[in-house]
Length: 335
Image 1 (cartoon, rainbow, N blue to C red):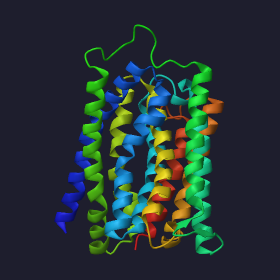
Image 2: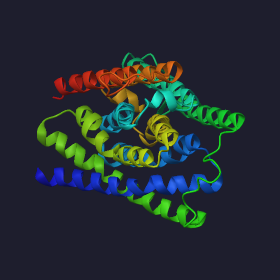
Image 3: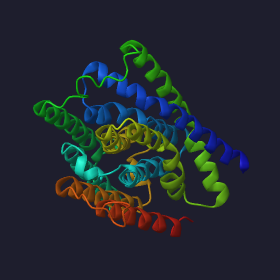
């Protein structure tokens, strides 16, 4: 039993180690290509920090035979990423993150609400057998893919219209590294993340079986926590760089990419529709993330500047409350 926990810890440490370098390299690539901080976060960092979820999901549905871990990992990562906004809100001083963040993040959060709603509704409809299949994949798969592409196009078009710059003149931080070197190192650390993520579902499935816990519980909390370590490292590193928009964009963009992973996992799952094979409790996780994303949108529009007990904004408190309730529900139904 201890071996499986050590395997889980080893994968988590490898992911954390690689993730600590990915933010700096992504920032360098963005600086040298003229990409904005928001766009670097939504596209580049989001895709790479979601590689553990991608590798874990494909491995879970093809080799490990654990679709509940695949879906639980993705949805658990989305609420974990949104909970990281609470940590960012606490650490960012002197203002709240919502008073300083770019309004463009509303697009990412809004599309997150749409994709999460599609996933949550699809889980319920699949169990009620009211959602048609397209061969071996669910009807939701092409919809998720199309919505993700629309989200990326919308964010890019908004950034281009606003003329947002990645960094002001004179604020260059990465003159010591070339674009080619940054890209090669970026690919190397991304490979480490992928390899570690591939092994996670095996360790998670064994832990679930040995402990007598449901694979939904293990996937949504333990595996999702491990695969979300790059987001933790990236968020803290971006905060040290004072790159607030990159940090927020990375978390919200990672959620979009995570939901695309459900469509990718469904393609690799050849036994039928993926969401038809997982417990309906996954819809609770999806709609919890919808509520949290909605709170983020409210914060980005209202832009609260005051903190509760000098700690976090009212939006952060709402996010934390929803997250803790969701964790409690999962813990109660862990068997």
